[in-house]
Image 1 (cartoon, each protein chain N blue to C red):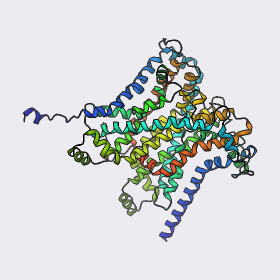
Image 2: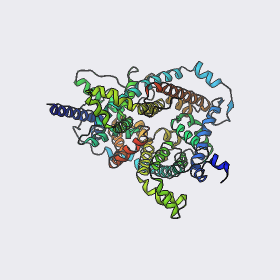
Image 3: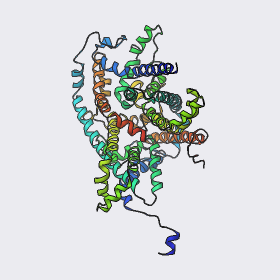
Image 4: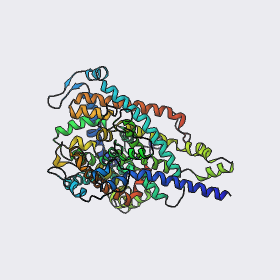
Length: 303
Length: 281
């Protein structure tokens, strides 16, 4: 045995592993990395898919920021949507998860019921359903009228339509809930026993035990739901088509229109990069602040 | 005394959960019930059950409005979904095996890249991908769905499989190697049968997501002949005169029935799948 070896053990590589992940590497290069990089290039061009792309520098970005009021409208609407729908969804998911974590008869069936709307996700059928439920003559309004609460123009009023779409997102809180549920079930029960010996009330135990231990899952849910909400499309497209008065003109709709209605591919690429930077910025902020509110059992990595 | 209070609290929890659960599924029940209503009945009535039953909205809706009906849309959807699901499962198992069981240069880096792609917004690769598929002549075919699936682009599924394979004892691999298995036969003969639950949940998730997908379908598929169920549904919504709303609702029901049935028969896999990784939705 050579001295070199004992001092510096060579890593035990098995290069065959690379062979197994090769499909993914190829896919990454062709379907993710190449598009990602070239979309930056396209964002500096004028390209309509017919004539070859023409390099125009920062013109697309300049036009977006200086001459496109729809861009600011979509930004505003998306901002409200993300800021409202995501926290409400997560709060609701957590609340229901706590209730569903009880060991009760039939609890599995109830969990299934709560998860069901999420399975149907962004399907057109659900958008159709929402359109019917909340239209002026729809069932929600007839119920409200019976309660003497008068009809609300859920989808026709620019002040309300966005919230009606937000409600659809909140309704589909199932997958966040299942994650919370899994987290709650991993909390050792002796923590609660110790708590109850100390005479802590239920709400206090929730605040001092459950919530801190769930913060890593809160972080995960927050980031993933935020990324999803930024890209919300089907509901706004099928139910309101961006209206009324562009009050539900979400960023993804704007992007879709520029790219696939007007075929302004360069312009749309610039929009997609602005969206990417925005999402990254919000993610970075969430991760930055997370050090102060996410609790890691092993002390965490504070570097 | 204390027991009584606990019982009361449990009862209250139950009541609340059942009540909210009812509100949660009420829209779906309404959808089903309303597909049997007359059009006048659908609007302006808060009753759940139809006052007169209409039985032919399913038959008429199924025929579609023009040349193509829902049997075409269903066949198309299956032609898209089945290969996509199959390739997703195969590619994610193979890639996950590589990540979970072997040590190779840059492994940590590559793994982090894969996790990062989980958060990569679809919008930022959408347009160049579309241009690429256009150049390849893949627009208006199902290849934009199937081919990326074959190259394990769904990081979510790869991650799910990795987590699962990591949980299987390595002794099995070693024993099989001693018995003369090479690394590939270890995967196919030893690990694959054990991966069944994970394979099931990957397949189910991908099935549901591809089945319900609207955004990619509307971008890549343009001829009505190749429309999927979600595109067909959207088409019938656009072309329906005010007379046939019940047909639209009936077809909405038809389009979600496969997912609902599948979900109820396999729901433990969903919960399992989502709690090991849990994204989306």
